Image 1 (spheres, helix red, strand yellow):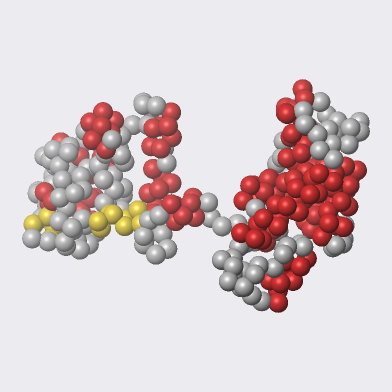
Image 2 (cartoon, rainbow, N blue to C red; image 1 turned 90 degrees about the vertical axis):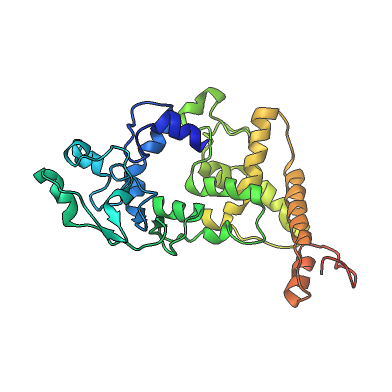
Amino acid sequence: MVNWIMHYRLREHSVWTVGDCSGSWGWRKMIRLRGVIRPYIEYRIGSGTSFLFWHDPWHEMGPLLTRFPLGPRHTSTLPMAHLSRVIVEGVWNWPPITNLESIEITHSLPVIHGGEDRIICRAKGGTFSSSVAYDMFHPPGPKVGWSSLLLGAFKIPRHRFILWLAILGKLATLDKPWLHHLGTSCVLCSAATLESHDHLFFLCPFASSCLCEVQPLVRFHWPYRNWVTSVHWAARRWRERNARIFRQTTRTPLDIARIVVTEIRDLIISKELSQTVSSRGLYRLWQIPWPVEGDATF
């Protein structure tokens, strides 16, 4: 793949100087990220045999060819010359330059470190990874009060995504203009009420019935408060709503309550909990038989 890109895409250029107006859509999008990536990349010069003199951003001015398009002609160097051409025994050794514009190149030369040429990631730690790249392009935002609802061992993975969208108000509820062709009324309670996040999770009688059915099953009363404290019910309600719209299937509040309890019980059983008072209390709350001595779960 690399050889193909070098031969058919870059040809007599590097990824830093090739044009961004040709090639596939994906290729053009990647090439246009150069300006974003450049501040996080440092070319550390060793022997100079791996860096292109005119095309690679080893100089503080960036790729020299973009600054001095006629540079190869004025300095009598080949367009694809390597940086090692002006390095002799670890020091700079420049040929005579008569063009005043090109003389600017020699005014602020970087340090030659010796050894092999290296490309360094300027991110924290100096080691590139996908998580480092994500943090570079998407700096961490302010902390939110609902992060604990999505993070932690006792969270069902397929529910996390739905909860995240629900918290942000991004679920495809029928109050969105582009979904009006599906109708606007809530499919859970069959009321002529516009389906929205507030209705679906707060005002819908069906959703309230689901919560009421769960409480006696686990002998636990969950106080009705607000969106943040009630949002964990979003996943199961949303899946029931989708089932009614797209699969024409219907469950009663008791059916959904039993599914919720079963999913949580299965999650608890799947965890390797130590024998503590808290663990026993968790099993007792969800009416799970305590494992016998020597069970693999503990």
